Image (cartoon, rainbow, N blue to C red; front, top):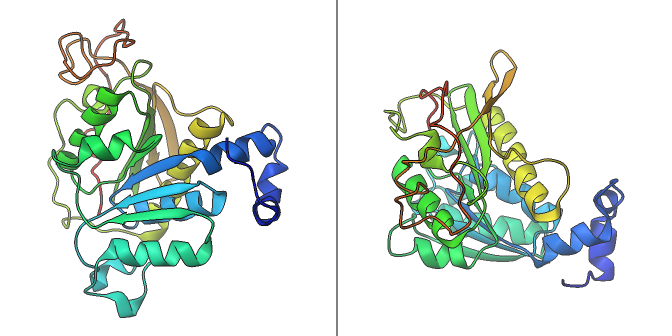
Length: 273
């Protein structure tokens, strides 16, 4: 693991003081590389909290240019950047906040051509993409290469979150074998909702990387923030899953299949830009 500089020791001293955290956990963060896909209101805010926590390297992935209607939730952006690539501004802002973090900005979406190289270069992936096509590609690649993935999505005032560990937990396709129908601009977005989910997403990644607390393994956290209702649902392996099931070519050797297909999960939740 990488040693901490005097500046880093001072910067992170308040979290180093946490019971069960300490210097070892901080060094694990510094040694880690995190891939964040969909750097918008959700992914960008999650990246911010990973940067200030001291993750050593962030790979930020997002295609497209900043729109004015992004500005109610994309807190790494500034008004003068409208019309320019979001991910470049995200990198610039994060480097100003924490210059000790190495940040790579990739102005692209998750594609079959880039997903394997991206996943292989990271220790964990945060799935904050704005469509299920990208999410499915990332999920399959994480299963293929045995990399953990934090899965987070929201729709209106609702959100869901889970952490996927290939070989230990159900994958995204187990949870949602049939993808919800949704229009990425067909529902409202409140920045405080995406920000709430983003903080929890970053926390899940920190837990996996450091061993702090208990990640959402084999559990789907569903949230209705309009009513402040939170519930955990048990997630189940689908032995016939096309990605991690017994007949899949993507599954890692350690994958276990002893449970039935996911039950009682809401299919109304959708990823948000």
